[in-house]
Length: 354
Image 1: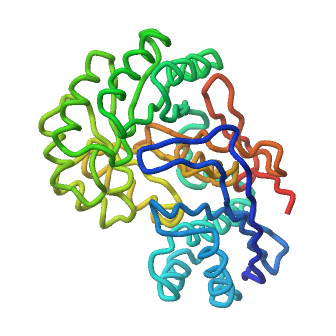
Image 2: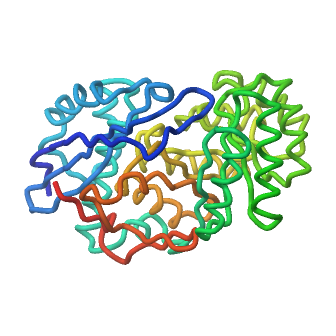
């Protein structure tokens, strides 16, 4: 089997409401759907969802890089992941979300060729798991109301965005806990918004509200600061923007900076390097969450397949596909009462109108 062509198509939507985090406000989501064709007629779908603030990519850079990968990869065996990742790295450095788009499509092809759901091909540890829902920054009262709506929809885990104003972050968490009650699991994500001292103060205040984990409290480059915060708080810490590559994972582990890695396929460059990051985490006693960057069901199905496959991946933040429902992409998994269940279809199990 050989790659015979690579095609792509941009998908753009207006969000139902602005999504506010410490690093900015999003009103639209733009992503690139990637289609890898083979000489055996098997087609794989992937997704390249850029984030300028996280990976330095835009929809325009994705569109510029994909023709380079098309020229370099036609004729390659889609199972030759090590070789293909080396080839993509030789074509251009970084640009992880474009590489993820190709990587995901190749994994879809592999599963379809072997007539096996991707989650089973990757390890098959479970076929269902809980995902959280994310509450973006707003007034504390509005955030509490949104959290209550998600609880009523059946979600038992919520991720609360923070990082702009520590006092408002604490008040929002207080009102959210009061609204959802004691049984809903809460975690927070500051998206690099605090310095080390503000992080310690805020996270310490979160203790009374039963927050179980705080993600990326300080700047992505401040590994020493992240380790300092971890030594001075009781709540577990996670790394997101500080973690892109297996090399980053090693630095974080050596610094004893975090308790959890948040792997996102758009940061890691796809499933193949994400498996390496997870292996480092498992070897170092660091558990893993799989997150998303406002992808469709394609990207979320790829991430969900990895969560279902691997024992060390114990948490999921895979909620962004809901923004794209009705846009010609379906399948992959079901979501009911906050639980994602994988479909027993080959590859990603996704149906795409492209």
